[in-house]
Length: 83
Image 1 (cartoon, rainbow, N blue to C red):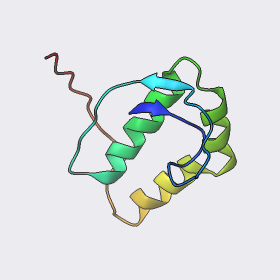
Image 2: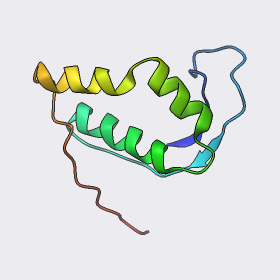
Image 3: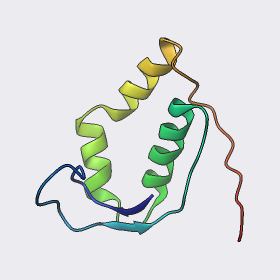
Image 4: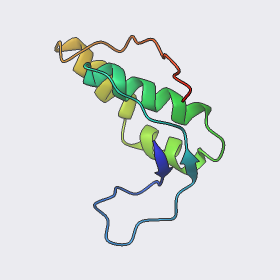
């Protein structure tokens, strides 16, 4: 999660990043990974445009549905590794 912009990286002219470096996340569970990313965006400084985009696209609903159809779990544990 580095240099997060409100625009998709597929956009030819994306907005400048609002959130710079949160860290690297990994999981075998894609739903847990996405939920952790969303939660960290909500906690990040400078998150207004990205939070507005998540909410306007019903991003949390997408995660809820993914869990309902057994694609994974929204539960996770963050383990910090300093290196």
